[in-house]
Image 1: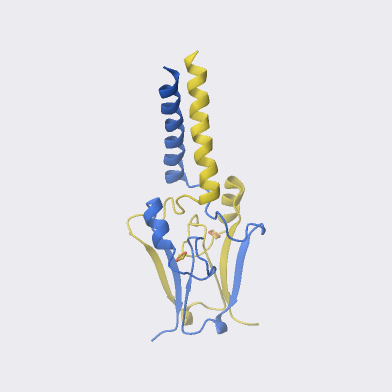
Image 2: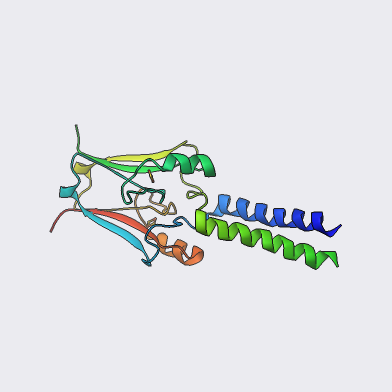
Length: 90
Length: 90
Ligand code: FES
Ligand code: FES
C-alpha cells in the first residue's frame, strides 16, 4: 500500500541528506550569535593569560571559549572536532 | 502514480533532515584530519607573531589557520561562521 512505500521514500531522502552532509558538510553553527552575518572574534595576545582554550565546534555555552561540549557533539554526530589551545611556553 | 509520489516523499525526507540540521546541527568537520579521534591544536603564544587568524569553519586548506573559505561555506549553507583572530595590541 501507499503508506509504507511513502515512509520508505521519506527515509531514503533523510538518509541521502545525512550521507551528503557527512561527506560534503552542512551548516556548522546552529545557534551562536545568529543575528551576526559573520561571527568573528578578535582578541589581544596580552589578554590571554597563561592558557586559553577556544571553541571550534560552535556548541560551547562559553563561546568563543571551549566548555567541553565538543565531546558530546562528537559522540552524537560521529564527528572529531576539538578546541584550539593557545598557551605560554613552560 | 507511484513515481511522483515516491519522489515527493524522498524530497520530504531530505527537507526534514535539512531543517533538523539547521536547528540542531549536524557534523561540523567533513574532511580535516579524520584519522584523528579529536582534532586539537596547541600553539605557543610566543610563536604567533603579530597576528594569527584561526579557522573555525573546518573548511580551510591551511587549517588550523583561516584561508577565507568560511565565506563560500556561509554562502552555500546560509551559515554565519568566521575565524578567531589573535593579535598584539597596537
Ligand atoms: S566546546 Fe567547542 S571545541 Fe570545545
Ligand atoms: S577558513 Fe575557516 S574560518 Fe576562515
